[in-house]
Length: 116
Image 1: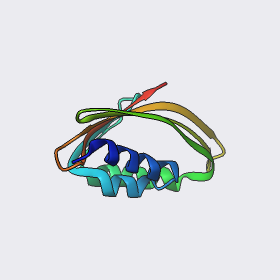
Image 2 (image 1 turned 120 degrees about the vertical axis):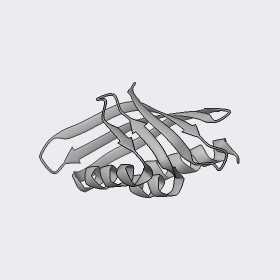
Image 3 (image 1 turned 90 degrees about the horizontal axis):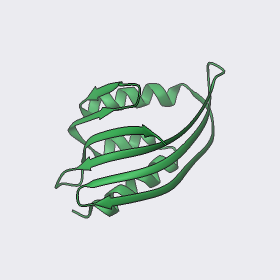
Image 4 (image 1 turned 180 degrees about the horizontal axis):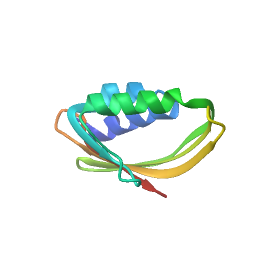
């Protein structure tokens, strides 16, 4: 499986705001995630639920900018800036690195988020 193509396809979906669909299409069933607030998910279904809740709390997408993606064997790192107005009146401006570990089938098994 060409991991670079998989990573770039997933990043393209995220850039278009299709974050839930990206998880559905590219996560392995047993995938785990961890963010910089130590919030973790176990399994694709749990991550889909988390992302559906998050996306549902967005009032307006001001921008999603994909800066770079690097791939080395089965690891990828993608740099994004996310700019959202939330339904609760707050604003989110995240500049982050998303590190992913991919399996032989081209599915994400581990995803971690780091503030850039």
